[in-house]
Length: 335
Image 1 (cartoon, rainbow, N blue to C red):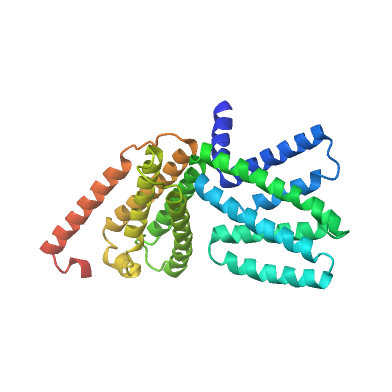
Image 2: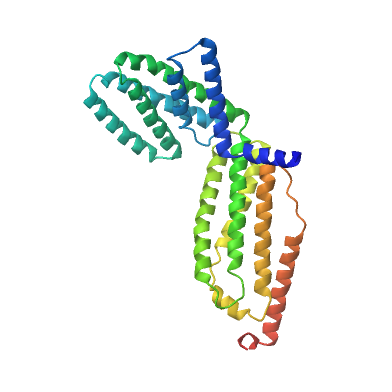
């Protein structure tokens, strides 16, 4: 029971959603505790809204990247707050400013995921600020520094969290990448089944759809690694993660580069076990990728029993035997 609980905790602590939720919970809990101690009444809600708006701007990044993004977000938040305070007395002008801000932030979000998150958080803060200013301009003036203070507080928590614990997001993306790669290898192995009249088109479609997921996982992992590459020699854990990413990329490139007429292969090797052995190698590689994904999540060493290497040796021996038969009996494949 203790082992199961420990493994579940390790898997959850590496999940991107869990770490983001933990940061938001910590920031909100501190604000609530301080608000209870300071006997805040009307001040508490604007600070909480600022924390929430800042949390919506977060993306996977290093502490340096997160600091730059937080400074940019605070600049956007300040502009939004000043715009609301300046136009709150004229509702039609405020509506025009809101429409212009929505268009501007939408265009900003088209640049990258980071800017998209900042744009979304800024629009949310705009709405919060407009609602706070609904009663009077004085209410907006009072709520503005409180919201900005809450947003800045979450930024401090986020930057410190990413500086102290930079490995969890990388582990999560690597584990997800190898899990996707393992499923891709399994789907690829299904195409090598030497059985005629199979629904190969359906299997091809499933493989093509999953290939898009693998490519997305590769891109997300690469961005996570590159964002943590600073000047000088990277730390050992980051070098190891980079090697693991390159290995996954190499396997995917090798497997996805082969596009054969699988129905012709099934006919040509119908009386041979070559395709079965190829299928077994891909299946075992997929299982190893899934095991490696679990090992990354649990921060344990992956176990290799040697079955895959022996399966590769058997496949190579079967191919050599088939080539020898074809040289001795050139017309055997057509019989």
